[in-house]
Image 1 (cartoon, rainbow, N blue to C red):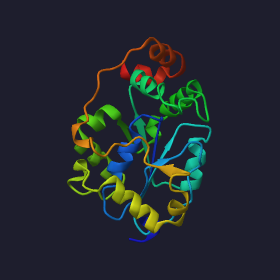
Image 2 (image 1 turned 135 degrees about the vertical axis):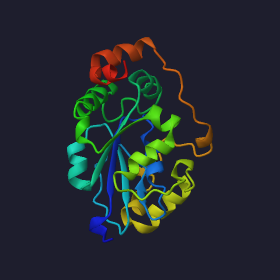
Image 3 (image 1 turned 120 degrees about the vertical axis):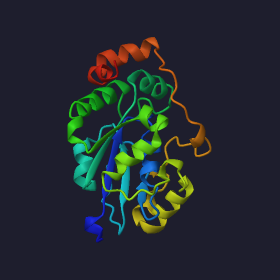
Image 4 (image 1 turned 90 degrees about the horizontal axis):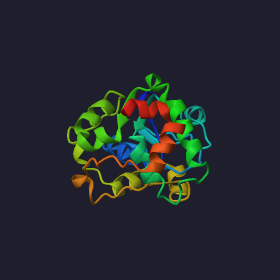
Length: 219
């Protein structure tokens, strides 16, 4: 395969949606270059590589259209999470309103979700935690050459980062200034469980007002 024929997969989701974990799963093939977490509000870089490339971007002031124009993906993957959980988790983070208020992030994501049919795969956090092997199968349909045991995460976060920094000058130059690994905790991947939905009053109010389409999907 030439570099031009290799898969270039763009994963798009809200912050705290589990999209970094999905990016790690997508990066399980040994020669995949992965930007596990492009920092908000960076625009996707014009990375080239002889093998597959995976990049995760999150909702912010940079539009999905701008990420696509720069990264030129061969496949798009949309990451969902129940909005009550999404808001409850993100609401407790220091970056809740960084670059864009949480209300605007929710509205932006809801507009993208309205066009979910334009994506090559739509994955939910709940599916990823409950059945990573089925999600790996969906990722293979985007062209990624994931190994049979990808759902066990044999390629560690450290290996993925080291490979990216070795094979991309952009990744090496901008490690921990424009990209990182998000909130990934590689020590608990085997024990992750789908949590009960957290129906706080704030989460319910924000979801109903700012991401009604996503909320309807989950109800």
